[in-house]
Length: 61
Ligand SMILES: [Zn+2]
Image (cartoon, rainbow, N blue to C red; front, side):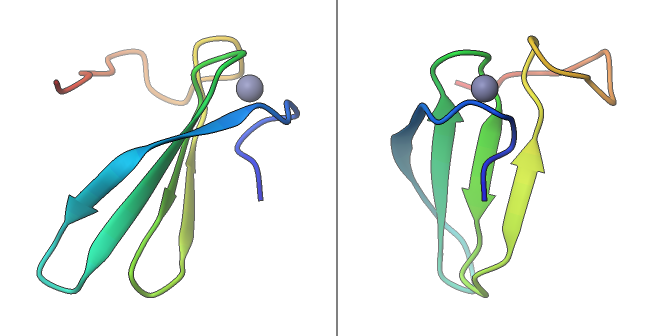
């Protein structure tokens, strides 16, 4: 369940939502993001080193 072919996912943190807690993981190699939602759905967001579907990413701090 990785967003890319690397195996270097690093736990970033949690974000509380109305439905529970989202868990965020980030690939150290390419910056791809993996989000695990409270419903255990996995969302992959490709990093800069992979194919990107959207050119304007706005990293929030
Ligand atoms: Zn990667």
